Image 1 (tube, rainbow, N blue to C red):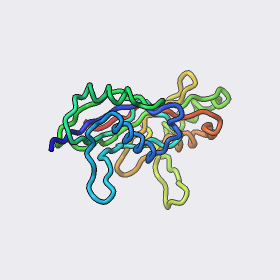
Image 2 (cartoon, one colour):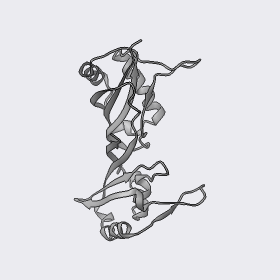
Image 3 (cartoon, rainbow, N blue to C red):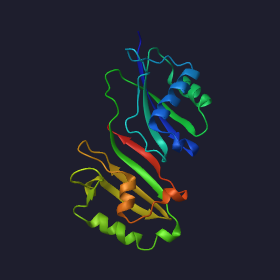
Image 4 (tube, one colour):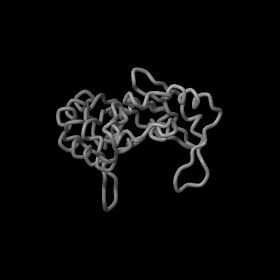
Length: 209
């Protein structure tokens, strides 16, 4: 049996922001079936298509450069695969590119992620100073509800900037821990803007090469 691994880059936007990770997996399975792709399934009583998302997107967030890796049990031309999926994708799901992976190539490991958050004007006073204070700190311990100890947020925030009313951040994904964009926003004293119709967008997922 010929097995192929492909890595798709896709966008998840609009109402699909409210689609949870499990539902997104099912949506991709249905999409692949509609596109008549030869999916490779796991074994056992409940076989599932072999697909993996290196870093699932949090509920309520949009993503413009997301990754899913899919295993096929037959050869498919990458351009044809991308076109077949794009033609059948539901609104809010955009297939951006497809890449064939070598058989022995390890699964994608995410090293950095970029986020963007548009901010209402009322939240801007004092924010540049709070950003500067966080970036200048040697450590920034953050406690998490229901967990012992704390996590040092500072080394995981590699870039943080405010320009044209938009907050951007580049966060490091470390095997020993990670921090969410929402945690960074909270430490900057920003209110829960998502309840007011403002949402985060993950604009880039950088993986190890």
